Length: 377
Image (cartoon, rainbow, N blue to C red; front, side):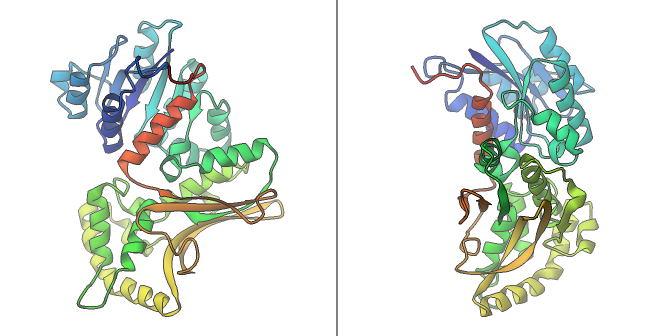
């Protein structure tokens, strides 16, 4: 069985890395894989290319480099047009089609996800949190109902095992009592780098750290999505919904990593420049935490109080000997307490950010959508 993929957001960081991994790591090689991957579609925000026989590496790299003329790509207006291209392209019983969403889009992509699930036989894998976190719970249930058609593990912790474990726990009727962890590789990087502050002679400033994280690609396109806690709140909502809880963003008690007034700046460069005003405050907060034998971590939690869930994300002081306090870099970690795992089931520490990790776990999610997945020959 050939798995055809149509990648939306192919010119973004994760999209480009995903295309590269598919070719470089041999996903397309039928001699290595019983179920090889074939890239049949690529889309940016303005252009798309669809070839039912498969897109060559040269064409794909031209497209991801935005050399649309070299790739012979066309312009398009609505994401529904991508479905039409796939629908009217040649399909047979020897192949399946999966759309891949690695965009940051909201309402328009929610509409597209629903079109795929409602109106086509195709599958969809997403690293985009918005359609399943920002829409209502009924939409979440409709999209995720068929595990063989919709993969969303990469919406939390860059694709670590949190979502699969929670879905399995629910299916085997192992009640979840609490979830607590660091779900942002970006904020984990920021807080663990702040620990390196060594006084006036060896400063490690918040503004420098965030700028570095943005340059590396650890942050969302606008870093305020990370520093506001919105990105973590979305992940927490997805986790809670995977537990079967009818909650939304409005149910999350959220305190950002930085004050609200800094989050109003739309211009990314101005936003980064403004953070210099918080450097001394964060240096002092970290110094105070260290004086208590603690450190700062951006913590997300779900606590079940009877049948009522309490969802919270905020910057907290935690012991340096605590599992969360010992996290370094972009590593994420979550502890899930269930009836069976009363002392907590530990997931991590694992990378929670990085385009390479996310792209690889998108490829893993694609494997789980194969209806006829087989072992290597």
